[in-house]
Image (cartoon, rainbow, N blue to C red; front, side, top):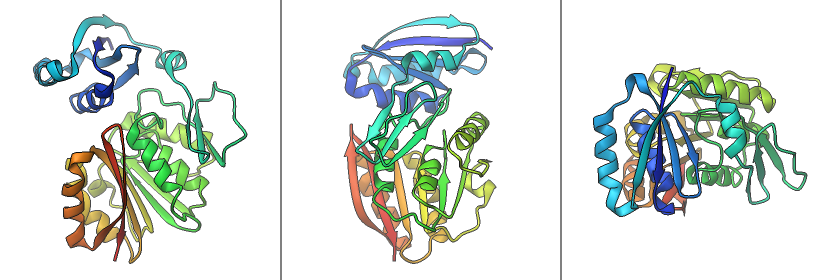
Amino acid sequence: MDYLEFKITCLEEFREILIAELAEIGFDSFLETETGIDAYAPESDFDREAFGQLIESYREAAEISLTEGKMPKVNWNEEWEKNYDPIAVDDLVYVRASFHEPQPNFKHEIVINPKMSFGTGHHATTFQMLRHQGELDHQGRRVLDVGSGTGILAIMAHLLGAREVEAFDIDDWCVDNGNENFDLNGLHTRMGLGTIRQVNPQGPFEIILANINKNVLLDEMAIYAGLLPSQGHLLLSGFYTQDIDDLVNAAKPLGLNLIKSSEKDNWAALILQKE
């Protein structure tokens, strides 16, 4: 399968926004560069009209320029090795790929070989979710990771002492990649395939993790609330800071109260608790 390659130059503060937007229209791999991002989409089902509209909507504000090319099937592992750097979330966790050296001065370590999946800790939403996980007691808890991606949040829950972790994603590539990452980190569970309605997880879960996007979170909020026991926690991210009120207002009638919010690079994350 051939891929279309777009080398996009843009303002630094728009990189993650563009990655999120492009992922919504079929792009499945990204590399951050010194001047912007390289974005890749399968040629076979590329939506050029949606791509053109997206670029035009950000062109002026983000100062976008781009070049387009075509490339044959890529050795994505090799590409990630060239461009993937380890990250640290405070002293809580060191996230690295298998080709990086371990670091001893962290409470936990996660090994992620991301291939084309999302959730490596580099994105501001994943970073904040990991930090918020570190603030909650996972010991002996049942944890549900909704839209698990690479599986990084499920792995974090396991390292923090969760008794049971369930995870799923709508993308079969993410499921395969997530299961590989589970194996690398000693998490003996399998990631499910489908939406939360299709997978139909059976509660209660004391902690639910959902790093997706605003529309999905709003659509599924009542399901999350129904799976949580009293005093259970719901961690949300995947939306911009200007969307916080919409999420909080949707959660409150369901008995979910805001405990904490954070923001990084205009991306927000929330900790909610059920009454």
